[in-house]
Amino acid sequence: MNPSRVFVFTLGTLSAIGGFIDIGDLVADAQVGARFGLRLAWVTLFSVAGIMCFAEMAGRVALKTQRPALALARSRFGPRYALFGLIGSLLVTGLLITAELSGVALALELASSVHYLAWIPVVVLLVALVLWLLPFEAMERIYGVLGLTMLVYVVAVWKLAPDWQGLWSSATTLKPVASESWPVYLFFVVTLIGAQMTPYEMFFFSSGAVESRWRPKDLVEMRINVIVGFPLGGLLAIAIQAVAFLVFFEPGVRVEHLSETALPVGIALGKIGLVIAIVGIFAATFGATLETLLASSYDIAQYFGWSYGKLQVPARAARFTTVTLVLLLASGAFALTSINPITVTIVAVACSAALLPFLFLPVLLVANDRELMGELANGWLSNAVGMITIALSLLVSVAAIPLLILTRGGTA
Amino acid sequence: MTRGAVLALATLAVIAGALWYLQAPPRSAGAYRDRAANVVDSVHSQVQVARLWLGAVESGEVTHPAAIIALQEADDDAARALGDFEQLDPPAGTDEVRHRVSTLTGEAGGALAQLRIAANRGEWQRLPRLGRPLPRLARRLDALERETSP
Image (cartoon, rainbow over all chains, first blue to last red; front, side, top):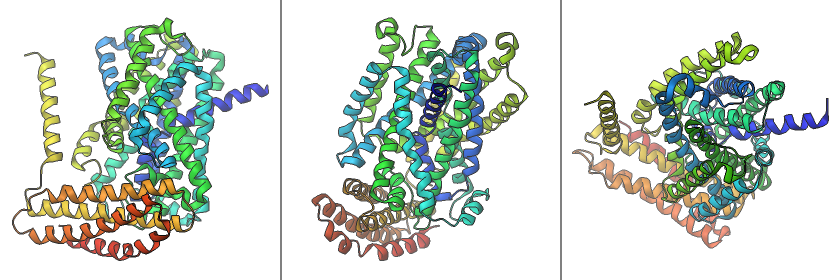
């Protein structure tokens, strides 16, 4: 095989890792690990299977039609349904942009001890510069490679010398620990699904495939990105749950800050480990800021049929560029109100979980359209996993908001 | 009125109800004790986090900027939890709960504030001595949480 092709595969895979681990995962995984051990690791396995299935479907639709899944969904379901999806998705992703921006600032705060609010304008400027100056491919490569430093969490699990039998026992127990109630357990099921199956990952992947000008001949490359990238993200998520369990469960710590997500790595690997973890958190949240921002702008541009994309010069996609800039500034301003970014994250992922089936269903139907998709239409495996994911996400959707209220965001 | 308007009004009513539920002060003794136990649990968690960071600082496992931020967050969270709790009016028969929770969480908050001040001043050699009361405070908070839970 041509070495440059292998390199392309690797870079695409790294971008998928960056898409999976964002502020929502960092917070939710550490919270879950500290309170439930690995008793919710099954949720991560389900989420990985679900997001792999739908990212692959959306990618396949983009390969075949050169159009992102959301744009096709609009023509299939009509503008009203698409508008509902757009507004819902924008509300959640808008909150997530704020949370991701704050996550980058919190990583810089940990590195410098300068308050995170002072970093917000700097981060906004940095994001704007990266979006303006860097080509799409270079952008995803840089944050993808830096995001690989998150593998330090996997090393930390091994260095903390856990009782592997105990970890396995925790992972195979599908009920809450004695100190937690079933509603709180179920709320965290919803939170993890919302954090790990975020629709923006699917939309970004699909729009990114169009941006990268993938064609049906790139099917294998696209599938390798999905098959290797998302499970690697899942591995990192379970590693974060495991280190939080090993360090925080026994003392009874409730994770409420990003600093607590980084601490177990410091305890396991010392200062170097902590610094690598902070670099990883910076890279993951910075990459996720770019993804959420672009995904929101793609959604708006595709709904209204505007010219869009990073590959075009800004003047040729003026409305797309303006929307991106306005979203960035508005999210930065919202973050500067000193609203707690962790609370924003928890609310955003719970709302994201509530929207899942409405955003997944159109993709499933479009990918099943044999007239449109031809030989790239869904097979039985995609349909089976897709249907199961939608059925479970419907349950999650119904339960998400009542559980958020009933458990006061998991604090009850 | 159109169906859309009815739906929008119903959604607004649900949101308003949810916000009221989330912000409403506890009316019964049971709800108040529940809130008190949550506050004690939160402060207990901050004390334990501070202990972990202190241990990591002593062993040279973490950087000072990260430790400064973590100790600041522990102090802020404990102070906020106590402040929010003290604003609540205790229902009849729960004055003793309020007194015990306020006293102990106030003591813990004081200890966390000392740590935060020393870290901000860069007086790292003082931290082990300032952290000595934390294990006992954690045990007392744990016991109080169990006694307070309804």
